[in-house]
Amino acid sequence: MVRNILHLDIRNFCIALERQRQPDLRDWPMVIAPGQGRTVVQAVSPEAKQEGIYPGMVVARARRRCRRLNILPPDFSFYQQVQEQVITSLGTFSPLVEPAGWGHFFIDITGTRRLWGTLLDTADRMRRLVTRDFQLHTAVGLASNKLVSRVAARVIRIQELCDVFPGVESSFLAPLRVSLLPGVGEVTTTRLLAELNLQTVGELAVIAPVLLDEVFGAAGQRLRRMALGEDSSPVVTPRTVPSIREEIQLPEDENRRSRLSGHLYGLVEGLGRRLRSQNRCPGELTLTVTYADGVQARARKRFSAAGSEFHLDSVLYGAALRLFDHAVQRRLRIRRLALNAAYLQSPIGQLALFPWDDSHGGKETKLLQAMDHIRERYGNGVLHYGRTEVRRQMAEDRRQKVKVSNEE
Image 1 (cartoon, rainbow, N blue to C red):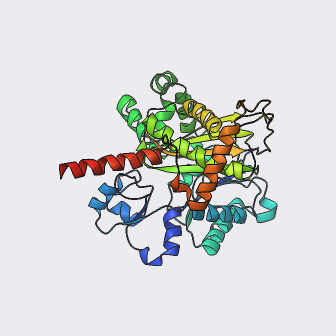
Image 2 (image 1 turned 45 degrees about the vertical axis):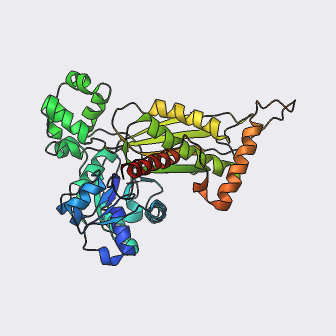
Image 3 (image 1 turned 60 degrees about the horizontal axis):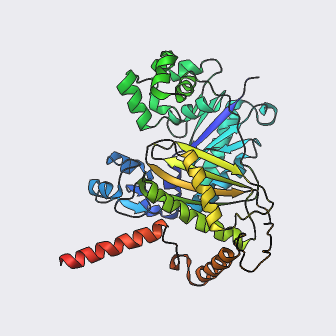
């Protein structure tokens, strides 16, 4: 049975939402970035793109390139709220709606013809619904799988619809640039051009598989299947299991393990504090790593509830560090870290037989409870372990101040 997969792409999603809150920025070049200096740009408005600014550029360099540039900090909770509202609205057309990043949605509309009419009519209804209810403009791709529908939505202009008929997927992709394939970032594109002299998807589709294996290893066959327009992955709705999530957008892309482990411990502190406040421990821990080219890597571990001590920061950090070592297999810089605790359960503790026996983390529990109380009263930033990146940065700032004062 031929599937009908629709990809709805809300162009410049985060920029558009910020401009709804600040209409005076509508025609000005603007970017979204966490702070100033060496941090990197995350989202770029069309006006800023015309000035030569692109995602991943250092903010200081972007500021020099465009003096009238507006820099806004990201508001992920606001973006997530609108994202969920859009998913709810699209769910009236099909129960299978999968978010695929900010402003990107896959919808499986197979078998909905009797309810909503032709496929093109259904796609147009969705497009007009998002425009009417959220004042957001979209591009829509329709195809027999997720891969081709996403590419179709990328190659058309805003407020348009591209319908790729079943059986012509490879012909549709052949003349397009390799960089239009999902997950093929700048690094992969450069290697394809430098080592194999490949520029279009069609050239990638006919290359000998053994050459792709030599250059990209196991990922070579995945690249070839994408070039042929093959994708059997289903549209998966978000799981509704109890979970707690902590994430951080790094101030600048980073690949030093010492810095990354510091940021990771900061996530563990926040996650552990929320688990303890709810008297819960995780049945599953997932670490998501986002590289500078947008490619994500995940590592997941399931735990037993019996005798669990995963409400303790030290135990959580040990598990998170093992997940980090498993997930990070590339030398590329990392842009984002997210730690998710799911399948939350009540911890089943065990009392110590002797007062001096602390094998079950009694002393650490009391210490963490005291730290949680101090943070709740005076703020999260008043107390940190030395291994966190926050403390490391504070120490670095103090060293810089001492150096400057000595030079003066």
